[in-house]
Length: 61
Image 1 (cartoon, helix red, strand yellow):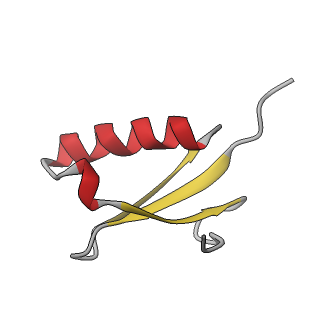
Image 2 (image 1 turned 60 degrees about the horizontal axis):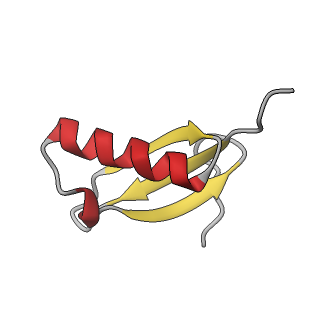
């Protein structure tokens, strides 16, 4: 049985956003760190802005 994936959205104060699927918040945090490093950005600047079942339709936390 496949694990259910949710969409996680992150944004930094300057408005840089990214959203992706992950099976857990822990996995999402690792992906966020790798994406931020790849873009040359500080991983700690990005805050979680939503978790949802569909892309672009995140629920606020």
